[in-house]
Image 1 (cartoon, rainbow, N blue to C red):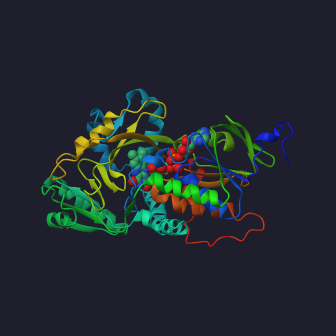
Image 2: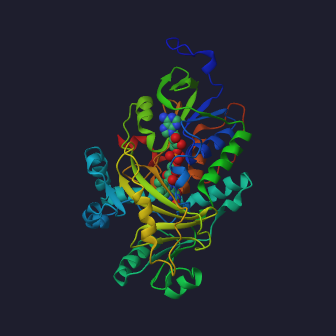
Image 3: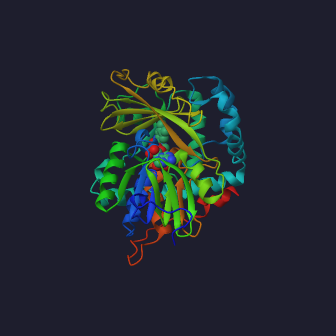
Length: 434
Ligand SMILES: Cc1cc2nc3c(=O)[nH]c(=O)nc-3n(C[C@H](O)[C@H](O)[C@H](O)COP(=O)(O)OP(=O)(O)OC[C@H]3O[C@@H](n4cnc5c(N)ncnc54)[C@H](O)[C@@H]3O)c2cc1C
């Protein structure tokens, strides 16, 4: 039933039954999965697809990262990190009043019970994520874009050894496949790395994509072939109607029977408008520096334990990525932080990386204080939610899309696509925030 108080101008009426807001990895993988369930899908994004956080992430299929973004040990090093403007973690003091409730929740999540719940929730997604990616990429003839040849965490100071060993023990406890490598093993596998590195942890069940943006674009093309429409429009507000939802965009109103909110770090306001719930979503801003002249330095992604950043070999060069900055969605990027990644790389290789023609980038990780995304279906199925994947949105997007397709079910008269081993939804429900 159309809502008589808001007549729809015929030129803006969409013929989709599901509108997806956000064409990042989460929105695009979900749109494709929904179309394969027979739904007519329209994807709205204010910019071209894949230009948000999904554009510049480190490309790491980080299945080994089963712990929340903060643990008790970080509290000790936090003060030192926060006063260093170029450190791996930075808080813009002007942003502190807005970040404080989120940070408080983060600290409360360090208590054993909620922490264990987060670990279980992350594991349930991570352990299924590679299989979901294999299915997805095989279905679009692009399996070659994902290399599952492991990743390496290196350390260089003897005093870090106990930290590495403790991490290894915690990971083994969580059934993360991990191997301890000594100095020689590191040199054999990655001979360009400095021989000052003392060793590390190798994670065989991880991998990387050759270019996250290319992956998004291949999925966009596949979605279009399945009938998904893409439109560049910014959604300014949303409301429920008797028969579904109405979205006010800068290109007019769009209506459908269901909406999927997948706008990454920008999802809180629309969620509040549609569900009346205020989610504690904030952004951990992250940076990368892309080095186009450094294709062949590394065989797989390498992270430094002490320097806290990652280097991933991609088809477009070597990507240095990392750092967490709390400064909100509106402050301009501080690209000095991206260039700092190059300085951090100095000493990790036998010869320094060539940063000529390098390009810096900043993106908004969508982060909830318990390090779990929100994946849910509300308001009699009119509202689907998929956001808040923080540091793991690439890793978890294919499995999230399968969950969303399962939540939406097949379109009328369409047979359901094969249901794989999906995790239970409870840990990801919006209701956990009251
Ligand atoms: C430096 C860095 C490194 C990372 N490395 C990794 C990694 O190695 N592995 C990993 O798994 N994850 C990594 N991540 C995290 C990952 O990139 C994100 O979790 C993921 O991209 C989130 O995807 P998304 O689709 O939810 O959001 P996004 O990609 O940000 O997409 C959201 C989209 O919504 C659109 N949008 C927002 N509001 C509106 C609106 N009102 N109307 C219309 N459109 C709107 C935006 O334009 C955007 O395109 C990294 C992130 C960063 C920043």
